[in-house]
Image (tube, rainbow, N blue to C red):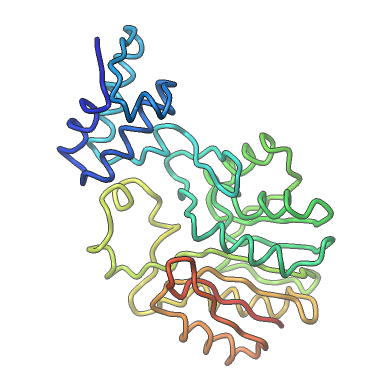
Length: 278
């Protein structure tokens, strides 16, 4: 079978906008089939083996059902490293890379860090690699997420300590003493589903994405309550947030007694991060 980038784009354009179809076609042609970017842009015709032909057909069929390309490839680049991802685990976003950078800059080298809702482990592992003297812990409610996070931890030779906890029911013991608590919790309101892409709605875990319309700050309030008991004096709390709730999150933390509360915009100019001190 002969295949060209234009053929891939044509097939994908049946389900995706032109720009996205072009990006997916390039991933198939270059990342999966091993061709060069130059050959992609020159629209080179390549011959596929029988196995490659079946692989491409399967990928196109999966993409027609809006399965994320990251699940199909089984990987996502994050903070310069390759993380394994699969269905049942949230795909890391570029904005979360910004959160990691902000937290790393605010951290002392030997800090004790807790990542709540670790998912693939991207935040915790990235911080552990940036701060090799730090002691990093990561919690999640999902067994699937913890399995993936542990795989990434081993593959990337990090030393993160993982535990399974439901943060909404966890009771602080009073013995925890973290210098920094960081979280990218569920923050998309149920009413926002109508604005979302089908590859997110149909495939990524709802438990990692959505909160009730009547309580959009559910996780921030609970983590804020726990962090008052689990942070060291002047310990730092870092959140990724829904851009619509920057002021509300800041006010929540103010009401809980935090100090030096700041809202930080992401590279797109949206309110995306809130950080504070105990």
